[in-house]
Each structure stands twice: as C-alpha cells, then as structure tokens.
Image (cartoon, rainbow, N blue to C red):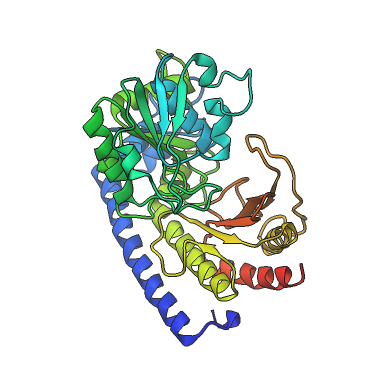
Amino acid sequence: MSSFHLSSEGDQALSLIFSGIDTQVKENLRRVLAAFRNHRVGTHHFSSVSGYGHDDLGRQVLDQVFAEIVGAEAAAVRVQFVSGTHAIACALYGTLRPGDELLAVAGSPYDTLEEVIGVRGENQGSLAEFGIRYRELALTELGTIDWHALESAIKPETRMVLIQRSCGYSWRSSLAIADIEKIIQIVKRQNPNTVCFVDNCYGEFVADREPTAVGADLMAGSLIKNPGGTIVTAGGYVAGRADLVEAATCRLTAPGIGSAGGATFDQNRLLFQGLFLAPQMVGEAMKGNHLTATVFNRLGYPVNPLPQAPRRDVIQAVQLGSPEKLIAFCRAIQQHSPIGSYLDPVPAAMPGYESQLVMAGGTFIDGSTSEFSADGPLREPYTVFCQGGTHWTHVSIALEAAIEAIGHA
C-alpha cells in the first residue's frame, strides 16, 4: 500500500477493513463447511457419468449442498449454463407465461438482459415476442430504489419482480441484503403470489446471507463469478423454491427432463472445490476493491462505492472521464495479468451489449470476473468497472501500472 503514497490514516483504515473482511470470510466458510459436513461430501462425489447424465450422485449432492449454503429449498448448479445471463434467462422463461408482466424494480437491468426481455433486438424469441410485458421502476435522482413508487407498483398481472443486486454498468449503489429483504416484503404485501427473483451475479458470499435466505423465491448467477472460487471452468446456478428451480431447469434441458439430465463431464471436483474456495476469493476481491476506491478517490476521481463504504458486490467503479484514460487503464491491467499480458485491449462490439466495450481480462478462465479484470462501455462518463481478484496484492501491482498509464493518457 505504501507505493500509492497513502497516508498513515489511510493505511490504518484499510487494515481495519481487511481485518473485518477476514472475519466475514471465516463466517461464510463456516457455513460452507457445515453444508459439506451435513451432506457427507466425499471423494466418491467427484466421479461423473456420461451421456444423458442420469443419476449423477455428485451433481445431486452438490445441488443439495449449494441449496443449504444459500438458504434455499433447492438449487441446480450446472456446467450447461454458459453464463449468468443464460441462468437468468432460464429462470425468467421457466416462470413467465404470455400475458404476465415482468417488473424491474432497480432501474434498467444489465445490458445483456435487454435482448432477453425484448427491449433491444428482434426475432430472437425474447420475452416480448412471447407476449410477456415489461415495466421498470426508475431509480430516484440519488440512484436509490423509489420506495414510495414500489409501495403501489404491483399489478394483478405482475407475475415476477426482477431485483438486480449488482449495479451492473450503472452508477447506482448495489443493493444490500437488507434492501432486497425490504423490497420482497413490500412486494409480498401487495401480492403474495408475485415471484421475487434476484439477479445475484457478483453478490455471492459478500454478505453473511444470500437473497433466498431473506425471502427471495428464486435467484440465479454465474459460476465463473463468485461461487466458482476462480477455478470452475464454466457454468451457472439457479436456487430458490423447488418448483421454480425445476421450471428453470426445464428451460435449460426440456420439459420432462428438467434437473435430472446433464452430464458434468468430470467437473464435480472443481465445482465442489470452487465452492469451498469461494468465500476466501470473494474476500480478496473485496480487499482489492477497497484499495482501488481509496487510491483513486485520493487521486480525485469519482468512485463508487466510496472508500470505506460497505461492500455489496465485488465491483468497484471509477469514473475516468475520457476514452483515452479508459483504454489506458484497461491496457495496464491486461499487461499485469497472468495470461495474455502481451495482448492490447481495444474497444469492440460484444454480443449482448449495446455499446462498444474495452475489456482487460487476462484470466485463467475465459471471462472469469472472479479473477481480476476491468472493463467499461465506451460511453460517457467513461467509467471503468474493476471486478474480482484472487489476491489483493495482484490488484495492488496492477493498479500501480494503471495509475501511471492514465497519467500519460
């Protein structure tokens, strides 16, 4: 930390924050270990089956372990989910039917969901093309949930409420577990049958509870983010009410097959091990985020969250103010990545995104944002979103280079 010329007060504040994160990691790991112990996980669960994937004992026990950890009735942890967006889409298609309404309560959803919903794109089988209506509650001017509007937002046709936990590519604060719990309570008071669904990407193991433990009916996320512990090679999950989880897996596979199919291709050991490592890896990412916020705040750049603010996901945003600085930042991160350090990130179109993106991601798993990465859309105010980090010392080394790079941009 000294290389950033932080004050002694800054060093001390970070040390206290890091200590608190370690305490949180310990509590989350205790929860993981209890679930492994309760379900008697052993080496025989690492074996896999082929073909249809029927009677995969390891997969079945992993689902049970994951469900216990997140406080859900059921879970489906699958390598067949190609991304968090895919898992979320399966959850939406599993529950929603023609004539239903989907209501997003935390402003506009993440870019990659726009074509799933039908806000952008056509002739792809979006929700809109199946007659599912969409509405969203705008955030307040301060970027917070409009609690007053939410009190009367649920209509008879509002089958599902979409709660995006992370800020995505917006400047709003990510949602705390207490915020999610409050949203669910307000929705259920209006209609107990409205399904409360949480896009949980980037949020797993940041707090001591997950959304399904505070009343969420269903949630979904990616395994190459937090819960994969940086070593899972692909996949995603859905968790929540057993009937809703099964409905989502029927969209992943087929009606009548649901969660009973899907070979795990000898990935069970990595899936279990990644889940075991996840609390520690999330803790390291949170430390890196705190360091990033502290350093760039002192340099005069707007940051979100602010230094010393509670973390609600593993994303740290910094407004750099120009495309040149955004590109220079990402190039520096790429050059100090373990894989592909020789590559030069350039702005390019990305499937599912509206704007061109510049991305630094020299990761062992392609697209893994539980490892250290940085990216941002090429649009004002040219914000870079730093994510993940296997250890905060790597973040520190990369930030030193990034600070020098943007100084010359």
